[in-house]
Length: 125
Length: 385
Ligand SMILES: Cc1ncc(COP(=O)(O)O)c(C=O)c1O
Ligand code: FES
Image (tube, rainbow over all chains, first blue to last red):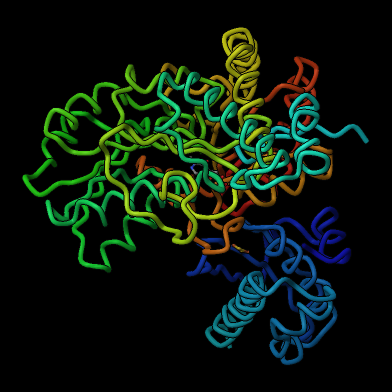
């Protein structure tokens, strides 16, 4: 049911964990299936230098979390913000139709971490 | 890689003795049982003998057996058949919250057609309370359908007790015995049922064939109209090979039932005990009133589909009631009805043992699961170490 790429990210997920001194943290829940994803980002000079995630969810949720961390790392905050769930699904060589909503979770978690980072920098500025 | 199949509640392989018994009815004995010449007669003979066997195993008579395409059709025929035949007597139907969708969705569909439905709750072990069934009976109740044992958590219902209460009021009583055929005794008088459905592929017979017991005197409106087969209760040229296979598989399962159940029960308990060594793990269902081959647990903080994928990578086939494994994205209605939260129900794992499973298989599974659970927990935002 899953592509080789999805299974590869599922079996060897990249960037699992937490960042204790993160610059932004995002946590989102999936209203449709009840799954939860949390993401930590480290930002230096407006560039995402480190990113970690934890996911309570299906194989697709784990693989999309892993994939989005690879896509986002090294990008500017603005570039990373533009990553959509379609980009993630494409990078994973497709997701089964019933699993497309899982990729929303990853894009939303990253978006929430960036929003948190913005809020923090706005209040310290 | 060694592969271990532990999903026998989903389906089972066809036993060699069974397909050997079926083979002639695909080739040399291919006749239509309704034909008068020798080919027809030999097919008719096979059909009659299969019906006699199934009837004897249920403690019924041959005329009370209707062959179907499986458990889903059996439930549909029993429920819609009685509802349509008896609707002049009343339009109220009772069932339970943990039924298989073949029953639950049929009853809910009848609700859209003007029938009234009561869906009884279950306790934390998945048990239906006979007193609640009795209290739900109304003057216009025409049918009660309660499953014999649950396919997800293995809880065995007090069918005989419920049957006595229901039938004393002149109400028809159906039980979905799809999971218990081959595992428990199915004497229809001891069980106190009017209708009982079974499906061959759950007891090492072929898929797509089942049987419905219909007690003499119970009127049934057919689902399928056409020829006069099955005493006008189910039109269509009979699936002769499949029916022969069902009868053979049922016969073998009954012969071996006690010894095999005792063997499976030991493996089951070893598996449950081993899994409970994993922290934050709970058993679903009753430990006493449980199918001999059913293991159902929830591992907190993790999700079932990712667990199944990891097990599959190690050659182990199992199932889960997680939302992520179901097309609907809702976790198992059975676990929710037993009072589990969405989050916990998400982390459910069902292992159902069968003929080919050995102690070594159980030990292999017990050796693999803890590491998988630990790895997924390390990845879970809900787990605090
Ligand atoms: C309890 C129960 N009832 C009904 C069915 C449906 O049987 P079938 O697959 O033969 O239609 C199943 C099997 O999935 C079952 O487990
Ligand atoms: S995240 Fe639940 S189905 Fe994928």
